[in-house]
Image 1: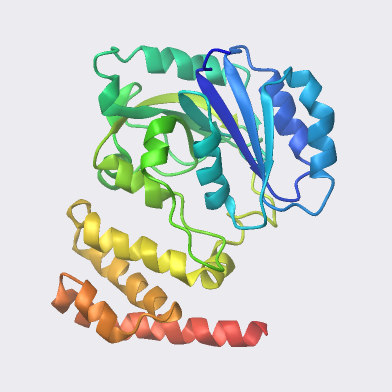
Image 2: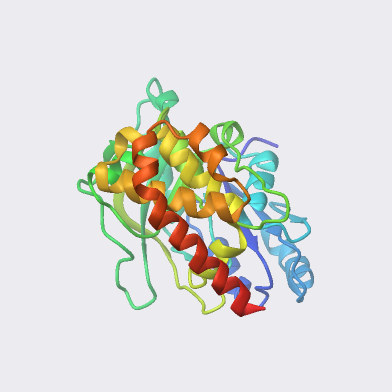
Length: 304
């Protein structure tokens, strides 16, 4: 069997009600050189039965993995290890991939000269909501070459985006796993990749995204409190490795968040002092960081 160009990755947890729509959108892709990987993050509904019914329609191109409930980032690591394609494309289990999506990504990827592709992580396009509204902002130019840090911090691009990213690069930059936690921000990895590789960005809508009341995006604040170790790693990485992309106010905000989540995850002031390169900034951020930590502690107590 020849290697497919794309590995479409669907992570899912108790989404038997929305998965058919996502699967139908994959089955309807005009470009057919793909495999489909579904990682079930310990679902307790009838997801497994649903997948078994769909396997025949994908003629052996669907592979199903099940793991205990560990979070989307762990499922992402598994998909990257198992993917047989050259490029991986994420499709959340309650979203829709438009029929032209893979074909557009293929054309964009091959528009990069073969001799230059080693410097690119992949290609990326836009998402919209079911209402037709664009999610976030478009890229400054169609077909521009940049990276995650530049595109977000210099150009201020916001919102959900979808890319096809090289599988070999994902394997080089796996998500860290914190024992007992189930979340880390996706951009943890994208920021690290940005120091080494670029993306080609296109202003073409590839997927329809909608956020459910029980979804990850809707419950961001509560989720962060339940996963302080991952948030600590995120803000620590921001200050140690990406400071050159931040202005003074952004660095101060990152330092406040670092102090907050370091304390929530058991990393005391002495550890923080030793880690932080800018001691003065850490001291200036300390009152607000400790204040946020105390508010979080009260929230956690009130939820019991």
